[in-house]
Image 1 (cartoon, rainbow, N blue to C red):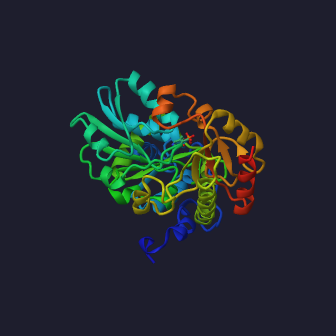
Image 2 (cartoon, rainbow, N blue to C red; image 1 turned 90 degrees about the vertical axis):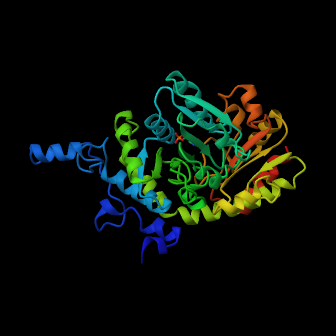
Image 3 (cartoon, helix red, strand yellow; image 1 turned 180 degrees about the vertical axis):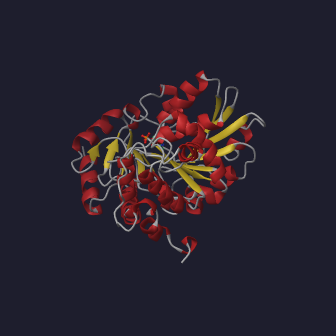
Length: 387
Ligand code: PLP
């Protein structure tokens, strides 16, 4: 059977076995360097793109297996891994932009990405225009022909689960379109099928899925990724083979994990939407979500993360005090249900104005739904809401 005849759940099992020989579990290639047989051989390895047996910053067999698994899940020609999601974002933007370049990005971004665009990029003379992700045509309208090198979207967005229209972005000609698809995982959304140039993940999250790996990964055309690799090898946000091994193991169960987490997330969203202590629930799977039609068109799964507003910082603090099963921590996509207060944690670096314009309100809580039994989670949340 060809890969394009297999379902994604099966690809998660079959993909990325290149460096393991006949072993069923991935092999850990810890080596940072490889011996050469001759000067010609050394020269061939040093000047090849991503030679697996040269030096680990250039490429590593265990990391390569992880990249191949993501490549097959994304339906891409190539994938390239990094030491973190931020490593992937920083290296991709800096590989594609120079001083004087222009970026169009949405306002509703993970705070680290926002800080990167506003800080280091601005300092290097890379200017960003921020647009509202949910406004039709906003990205295209902000493009400056000949100057805009990158359009950067994050969908669903952190923490309010707002969506960028992938078909609309994919139709924009000129700049490279880069989509941070972390919240969806490759099983929940396939940006490349919509004409996007680069699909990007913080694999630290649902892709690796066990809170035991810090990784980023991008996927797209082989030529484009070879260009990005040429910069990435100097940027140096090189993934650890150990983290790639953990992520590869995590990928094997991606389908069953996300299926269960999606079901629980939906049940929790429905319960919260009915609760008088909750002022708003943000989950694209709810028919009340303002972009539910778009979600139904482009998401294959509505997702494992939701956010909700309990009205005030005090009410949020009381909720966090009372949860017993849900753990108070940032990050998402792992087996444990995590809840965080974005205004004081993930998005604490935003100014009050930025928090207001991106909907990071004082009462907003973000929930990453784990693998505990749904009924236990519902009971824990219900109990905490009665604070
Ligand atoms: N993109 C999104 C949507 C995120 O939520 C995060 C982190 O939370 C990142 C990127 C950065 O990933 P990492 O922490 O692996 O650098």
